[in-house]
Image 1 (tube, rainbow, N blue to C red):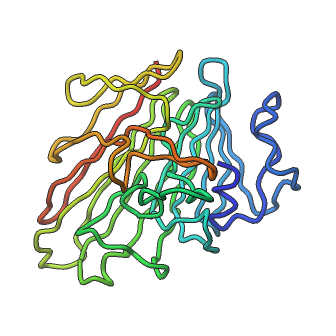
Image 2: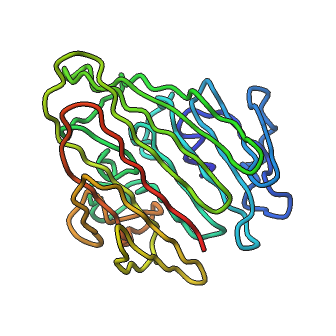
Length: 276
């Protein structure tokens, strides 16, 4: 998450979030002066308004856990930076829960890793938003045992689609609730195809359960509840985009939850992830 945050336009990051976790030393750089840190009983948070990045952290099952939300337009672009509006990542210890597809490996196939459709975000009509995307982090705060991160973008209007995308993230102890709202910005919206993607990290196995899945990875159990109104499929180790995660050296298959459907106006999709 450190490198992804820096690549997303953050010049400096906090040295530590949890004192006994050496992995959270963010390249040894001084703590930034533009970072706003808030904390509650469970979650604590650093937010970087200018870069549109918020990083929340707490301990889950005696190990550090971090949620990073990239709510702004990346300030720099390169092989480690893919344009994915309002993307959210989550790890618990060394296990990636919601993962970034990662950079293209030095050799081998890239499996569509850089495609926006491979990231934890929502797309309309398959559009690639380009580098002119206006996105904004609007809320990043801790309220007692809960933390909230909210952002939005109006990138669809450059394609003549009068819909704004709002993403609200609620962290409640070991549960991550993500609500994606599409709000009309004009009278005639028309019908548009929706693509919602949740890329899990390598090592997760999925079992269907009700309106979602039970996922397991080592001693972690993840309860996933998916929103209605979309047709959900699982892609893993197949043709991308989605279903692959790279560490820059090799690409590994990883389950990706993909929801497809359509909207004709205002719509809301809420996804729940809970560690048990």
